[in-house]
Amino acid sequence: MSHLRIFSLAAAASVYVLMVIGAYVSSIGAGMACGRDWPLCEGRILPRPDPLVLAEYTHRVFTLLVTFFVLGTAIMAFRDRRSNGRVVAPATLASILLITQILVGMLVVAAEIEPLLRTLHLALATALFGASVVTAVLAHSPQQS
Image (tube, rainbow, N blue to C red):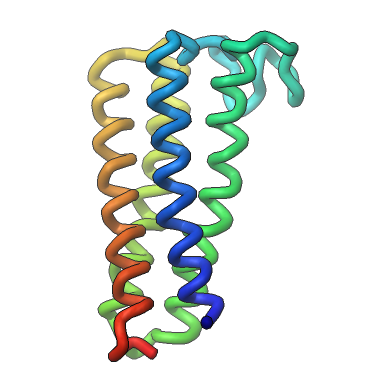
């Protein structure tokens, strides 16, 4: 299996897991557990061992893994399939959505979870997941080999 195929699957799966972690953080009311510090948590790189803080911190740290897979997929799609926009386009869109999502997440923290920003954060996550799934499907389709 090619690196693009592996990365595209990992990107889609990791985005999904990040959404589940984000839903958990929201459901337990831990969205502001790290305070208004971003990307730090309560002004620290490593948070104190509090369940709410650790939940929010896990969401932030897992974003690094998602970023690795989503951007890696886009780089490989461009490198390996540059002439085929069917894979490059959704991979590029996923990267743009990810960067936008990270910035909106930062604003959610800065605005202390303003409802409109939370809604935008969820909408972007859903679009990012969709773009990641489309990329994975196209990377795995027989005509994409």
